[in-house]
Image (cartoon, rainbow, N blue to C red; front, side, top):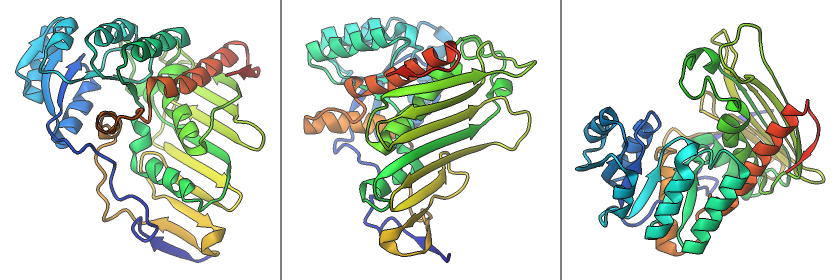
Length: 355
């Protein structure tokens, strides 16, 4: 099989992430821990204004001032939400605080984007979605993996019909966070690190690529002797998306070697796509519609915005266009249902659980 480089332009694929027309959106950030240090520069690179930050920690507020240039620093998030200068809220706390913040945002009628996972339980997520709907505000979830280069283009190749109807999507990750995040005050001690905190990314990708929701899942988690985390750090799951469509996840965060990977694979009845989620190797695909060649997608002239701009940009664009955000609270409930089912299956010893 011969190999050929091909660009997104030659395939009539998008060359940029859709972004809002307005560049002067005024954002307030609630919580300024580690993840905020990724959101903040992404927002600034897009030209959006971070006008206020709320965090109970004086040290975090000082860090926020230096990183964002925000003039308004609050110890109480309620003050930030009430601030008339804040148009849109970026909620970056751990899940335990999210529901009360969404309730206050709903009271003030302000759109809000929350970090993933949407919440700690399906019931909490359903309540937040209902609150937002009743208040008429847009509530979105930051599933930023959708906007990573290879993941983004895999979706658009599927949408263009180049591999036909997908019947299988697989993700295989081997990483070393059991070592790298040893002693982390939250992740190393929570009991659902892979199934909820991490796997919501991967489940959301399967739904994104396949264009449908899982009906049931079967999952098991395992551990190694001497591992550092409280939760099991090896996960295997199978997702039944209905007749003829299957998803698979193998996620290992126990590596004691540098031989990691983040492999993605999507097979359709007219071709296949293989790639790394995080860009370690390029996206390659075959398509019966394009002959017998193996194509490598050439992204050398493409400079997509940070994946953290994707979810916020989509929320802002949804406000401009008067539509539902791509990863709205309502839509993200299907991701939460699947990860909750995976967690339940694993705790039951690996049985089929309906989503």
